[in-house]
Each structure stands twice: as C-alpha cells, then as structure tokens.
Length: 174
Image (cartoon, rainbow, N blue to C red; front, side):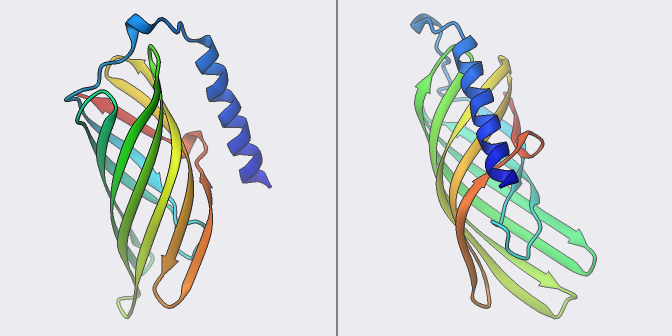
C-alpha cells in the first residue's frame, strides 16, 4: 500500500511539473546524438535480492529513440551480484525541459551466496517514465514499470515497480 501511495504521489508530482512548463513547440529538446551517463537503482520486484545500484549509459539515435545499457552490482555479506540490462526508449511527448517516454527492457544477472550457492536473475519489462532536465546537461528521471522478475530455482514474480525519488535516476549529458 505504501509503494502504491508513493508511486501515485510522485506521478502526481511529475504531472504538476508538466503543467508548470511553458509548452511552446519551438523550444522542444533536441537529443539527437546525445550521450549520457547516469546512476539509478535496479529492482528485483521483491524477490530475495536487494535493489542494486547501477550505472547507465544512454545514446539517443534521434530526438525520439534511444538505447540504454545498465550495469549494476553489489558485494559483501557473503553475497555477490552482477547485473546487465538493455533498454529501448521512445519519446511519447517532448516539452521544453521535460520528456515523457515509453521503454522496454530485459536484463540478466548472477547472484552468488557464500561462494557456494549461485542463482541467475532475470528482469523483463516495459514502462513509462519522465525525464526532467534541471539544466541543459543534467536530468532527473522517474519510471513506473510492469516487471517480470525471476530468480533461478523457480522463484518468479510479476508486479509494478515504481521507484521513489531517492531511487530514481540522475543523468549527466555530454
């Protein structure tokens, strides 16, 4: 219930930001050829794995389509996790400093507990998100995803992953 409330709260927050924008069509963002480096959190939808910190690299083919590579991992407490994900993004609506986009992604990881038991991790999903450009080369993003997560050994779960602001992405464009 708490996650649903937070997801709804932040969705309304970003909707409010969108209404605060000057929606002139001559000022839309031009992202073609842009590259970015970012930080985010990878969620495993409540399975035994913790959420992972991740580094993202995004490349915009044109003003409407981008690909993203996500690399995450964690270690310690007799547990090591490595994760790789690919994502395709398409702009739904582009405003002055705000993008709304749809995404589809798939990722694979390996988890090793106490150096004896290892398990594979799988994430497949699609979602919608918003990316707000604080300044021309710095953005904050927020996504809501429908996510299928599977952990080797038969554990799987389908659910909605809605990241709260501290878990949302931050990105630097160059």
